[in-house]
Image 1 (tube, rainbow, N blue to C red):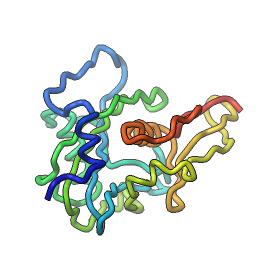
Image 2 (tube, rainbow, N blue to C red; image 1 turned 90 degrees about the vertical axis):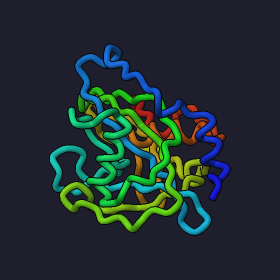
Image 3 (cartoon, rainbow, N blue to C red; image 1 turned 180 degrees about the vertical axis):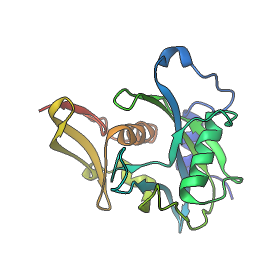
Length: 206
């Protein structure tokens, strides 16, 4: 089967997965990690999985995220990190995943990480068998939902910087904010999403 039009558009606009030269000098003091936007078909809809972290975790409890995690020395490259973490967290085979491209890295100074986001494609994804220690819930998000302004919201909340206004996605009852929202907003911009003054993932003083 040929790639759906939206995936073809992403492949033509994103940076290639390989060759990829890590620019470690730009992120001194930050650990490297990678996440995967795993595009696949559900019926005729292009969707991708997100995970909700267990509330019992000490870091990022209850947050919605893309499958991913920290680079390890055994990983040949950051694309391999994204695939390994997807296997571990979702419990799915990754051999058939086609690399589509990579997005701009996202520094997260609070957790001392720089996150490299990748997009991949597999026509049909086997039902996830998530690791309960890391994943409380797996939800499939339609790609088109990122293009709907009705899914973008703001709220005031307490942050390390004091009270702030946070812009986030609310899709199927899941609040997606922070670095994950920034990554998905970047992805959506390549598909013609509205140009927001404060895009999802943005935090500003209240």
